Image 1 (cartoon, rainbow, N blue to C red):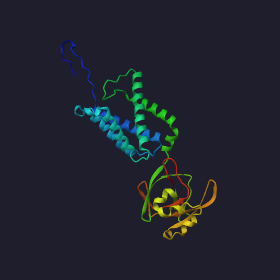
Image 2 (cartoon, helix red, strand yellow):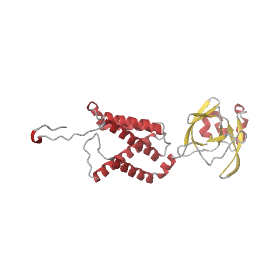
Image 3 (tube, helix red, strand yellow):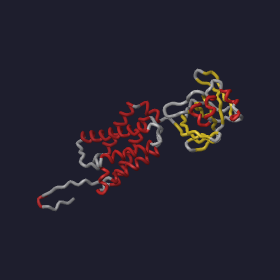
Length: 285
């Protein structure tokens, strides 16, 4: 702004905000914060959803600089926008509330780190719309937060790197949605066809045969072979595991099975009488 008054009767300081830089900076930071929060929670990483949520956050930040949309700067509106971002990113997670809380906590930590490092380096925060900090400060702030979270939540963050796939199984007119862990230690295969075997607990796979679930839980799996409705659909697969030198699992070829949306024909399903799963998955492949 040019000062035309005599003797500099007034002296305004104008913040110059480039909307494109504001948008892309928020896009990158929001994506990293969403990704970091997901790793802290130990959930499967859904990068496309995080990118969509970050797009919303960046658009919200860019829109808030217009005078006509000044209401976007109100605290309740910003909280609602953050909650919507978390819903876009983590809406399909079972522990949605936990993911949302962690996202707000990580965002607050990051904001505090930016402020502290900026003040330490003689910076200032004048505008509620835009914090004028250098890229090195942002990178350092995010690095500090990520290092702290990695140290505190190392177990959860490690589980986020585990390869888990969404599985859709159909059998005898019924369907089930599963989350399968790709276990490199699972060497079980069908000795007849050589197909890979997906192993799930009887309770997990019960939506496919609700009226016969109890029979699959029996220690002697041969009992289920006598069910007339399942005649010709089941076979026995030998297996060995820790504590079990040799055993048999009842198995079946699904009418349809999709791994992460891709239909597969080289996989059969075996039913364990015990639960097979862990944090974030309920069967193994």
